[in-house]
Image (tube, rainbow, N blue to C red; front, side):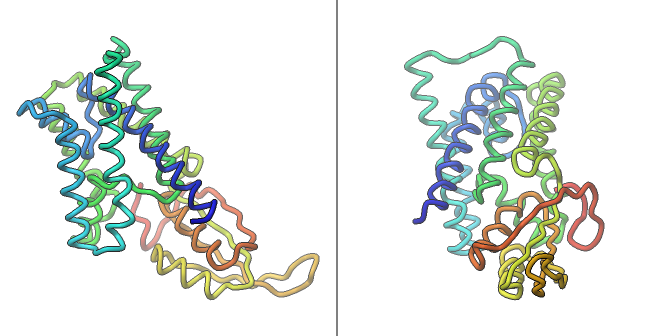
Length: 284
């Protein structure tokens, strides 16, 4: 394992522990529902009095196995770290809480919303920026996207929106409204950590191995790449610039593909305020 991969794993781990802290210390005590496995677990705990940690473990492992059955070993290996490390982090925080009596940290619900969003949004952004995944509800969302041809953003809204609505029915309208605020804050913060807040980005790559880079980008992300002939201003040599427009979640995959083929490639990234066309169906 090289230094670059070790740094990625370290930052992904930090991101997952930040997410777990936001969930355990600020969402669970106030029943804030922001979708995903955590939101479902909080609702089930309230209805059936099952410990939220047990539920997170059970749901994450179940979805991990579902991903293995549907997508195979490669997908399983990519998602296993986040799927298992997240409940482990929650278990560590629970042990600390028993020793130090840390919960609740505040009596102000709005303050809990803000801190949960900062920790969960920042943590999730770190995980995505460095090529990780949190597993959990991302797996059924991917299955809906792949097999039912429902746009990815719509699948996210269906799954997470349904969980927030369920939480509102269980805990009341006020908690539901605070939860919606938390959802938007988490999304904004994670977007900013990954790509400065943009939904889509255009990645420009100048390389001497254009065909190999293009093919690897497509195999990793299924994003098309335009090939633009250019001439070096100093060297006067003919080169090829690749242009790839991608969603923020695909940033790391594209950059990693470039570096695998050509570590000396010149890369610059622009923000894209709006992208229309095949493969870009709206917010992602």
